[in-house]
Length: 201
Ligand code: AMP
Image 1: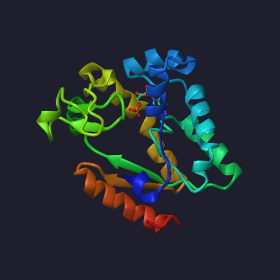
Image 2: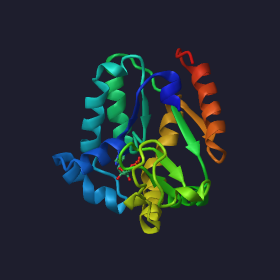
Image 3: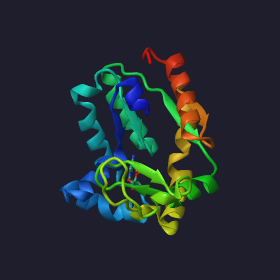
Image 4: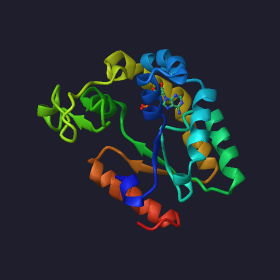
């Protein structure tokens, strides 16, 4: 929704890694076991794909990073590349309790072709159903299984959560209540973007 509204690319490291896995590239081969167990893929691999992606022309007017950085060394790496051309970073943390995240992830169904996501809790007809955009049968992500969700949350609390302090110390962190419907979260984020950046939307 943000990408559409702001007309800047949505860059999700998870999506890029899943694409590499699907196409069985060298990167996909290296990342597979980490992703399937809920662990983080090594920093060097993720840093390289982000640096590469940010070089593309469509990032000149801004970009949305989703799921990156997830470790302090990744944040340091990002800082080093953004510093080169003075790109400013606004960091938005969408906070929700673990129980709510578990509920959302366990009821998430994804279209393997176009990537659109559905939630079986909000629309039970979607569980095991078809994508309403391209008609492909929906699947559940392997890492949305209960044991893997638990591992991902542990990794988040231990390794990624310290980034909140990191970005608070760098003066660019804003927290948003994520325990609300998507449209409301979107409106809050857009309000912050309008207030804190030069981007008009
Ligand atoms: P996501 O779609 O963002 O939930 O990411 C899915 C999986 O991809 C994660 O559980 C990690 O294994 C891997 N991944 C995505 N982004 C990163 C990152 N910034 N650093 C390390 N691993 C990542």
